[in-house]
Length: 178
Image (cartoon, rainbow, N blue to C red):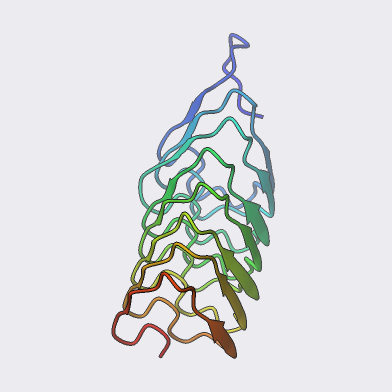
């Protein structure tokens, strides 16, 4: 649990707070937490973390980069964007729950994870380059109306067997599903 020595609850986890702390497996975050910064949990052994609904900002690159033991994550409703490589190379990450408020997901955000199925909310209008690339077991992707563009290589090297595009889709960039 993140708390200051004076007993005051912490509202921000700074960049690289637990960077390269492989021995940490479980993190309990306080309900007062508002923001998580770049590389805060990169290269940790986290397999269990619950991001509280009070969090409304996940900023900076590589926040959970290469958390090899992380298997699932739920992003709270207040978070509207995920940065570049936020969960990249979390090679055991099988499940992600994105809120309906999701407005943007940075490039390479879930690249080289182990997602099996994916539901993308209608608030997501653009899927960034390489966003879900390298999810070799990703077979089912559900798009809601609202999606307008799929970036290049967004789903490259995935095992998608069925795609149903929403009526709002306007463009698919090069090699999006290669």
